[in-house]
Length: 287
Image (cartoon, rainbow, N blue to C red; front, side):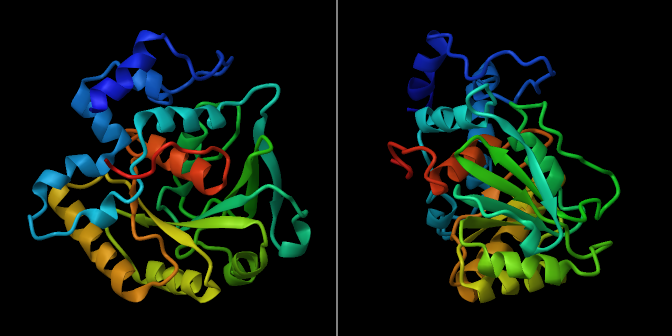
């Protein structure tokens, strides 16, 4: 079924974006990635598919596949992340306090995570089809010190939050917490956890903060390429148990991503497009 749904787009020579004067990553577009072997493409779109076989039969897989759109819908969402003269994607503003942020009508999504979780790298991968957008990635943890806003046309705004933990801004809570509580157009918070080390103490504190706001949020498991399947599955199942037993506002499905290999990037783009109301999907569940 996967290959049948993907083939019409390949035969039509479909191109998502116009040519950019900046270099674009070879896997930035699903159209380019589709030249890879079918199993590889499937694991890039749906990263959980490469772990499924290693799970015990007794493990309930439902929560890992709640959002499972068609390839057609994934490609439809990809267009939203392409910049054009009529759909500009660009850095908008930085702020340290809520009063510095202008009111905006379009929905917002914010990304928050521990320092060195790969947050800026993930945002850079999401915007890889618009390489002119400057997302600074540093090897030094705690590089992001302000709330950085990126406008995606008139569709939505993506907010890069400062990292917590090591080298976090001293006023991190005063900066971030009022935004999470009071930002009226905040559609979803994405809480990032390093898949190679699992849920840490600082992550649990951030999770509690998200729960206290009683606003919807999602767990994103980063760096899934940095450890073996066994360690990743252990960390993933531990995380899933916390989500199931200790949260009420968290979306049950964690999103697995690798910014280096582009695994899960296409699916995460599609989910963002879906929850911001930017596109209407034909199907969001696995048939």
